[in-house]
Image (cartoon, rainbow, N blue to C red; front, side, top):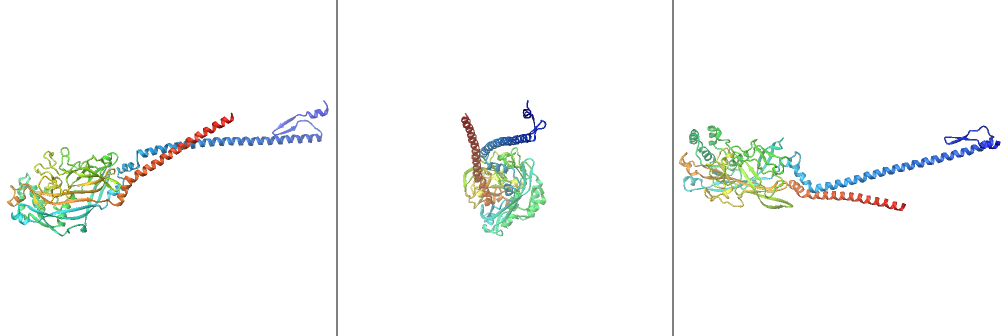
Length: 552
């Protein structure tokens, strides 16, 4: 092999990106030529590797970004589908369970700080109290025997506004609310026909009432002692008093003497009619609240002065007790026309059924008018023992209320004995019963919330004089077995403040509109999201199929 050939066959070894000679010495010229070629080759390889590496990294990054975007799109797609389904479910729930129902349900709890509680705890000045007195015009002629019957003349109205605040409020573990009302009456002279200093003549309630009450005593010594007591005090069968005294501060010396003689027989020496009426309406009351009792039992009385029934009533035999009735401040929710709510006031001393009469409109609101039953003051011969005194068989339409007046012979009726099973002049003359003006009254109630917007309640207080002919002197005989009308009251609420009625409009009328609108928007939004994602899925699938067909 020639020298030139041997030189051309010199092997090389690659180290990294370079090639180096592994032979021995060559002439300088050839070596330089060879080294230049070798260096050129190494630079090209290095550039190719760098280009390949950059391209490979770029492809890898693009692929990674593509997969990442694909995952993001998939997550976004799933989120939109889930959101669409949630919106549709919420809209369906909104149609089935309106927001209004949730607000009424929450009202069951009577949460402090919320409007329902605050407006109840300190209600606005809306209740008007009208008093009408029966002035006796012929007391002298009656006592002289010139007139057979007492003649009366209606005096009134004397108008007050009632301000009530509920105190000692406490929530109990058994989902009840206990409170004690405090009522104050404010005289409105501009609405009254008479002033408080005007005078009237009335039968002496202390003399005739105590005589009747003690005449039935089985204690012989008590009866005899009271007879002797009567001789110590003047027997004025009629008294002249100012209207203020009659309503608020009616006192007789005989009452003081009887309280000292028989302390248990007299509870109070003040016989003012309004004073006594409002004294009876300050008892502690516990009512049912909360979801435990449900809408149908909301604000029904749970107990009265910590007792399950009024003192003197047998709960097993007499239905005239306060349990499950309402004081008329709030009524159960979702009232129906077939419901018969029970109204109770201790001053009336019995349950008063309310019967649906008609629907009425108050703007956009629909109200249910419930009238008091026409038989509310009826006395029947089959009334269970304990509901009324058996010996006091009063005519139908006149109700014994002595149990709520500590035995004092007070009986109740409609004004002017309206609706009673008697002629108007059976006991006295001068009465003119009117079926409209002297009806028992009504409640206009918004049926969903049980809030009364208008009310009117009328009741007459009468003195029942028992048969006292065998016990006392002939002077008492003229009054025996008489029912003497003394006073009648009208309690009314003509309207509520605008902020309450506006809130009621919003809850009853506005909320359903807002609820339906919101549910509709949610439904449309949910359907839009679902349809949009479904269309995109179809487009994506269609595009892939087109590309596959083009590739083929």
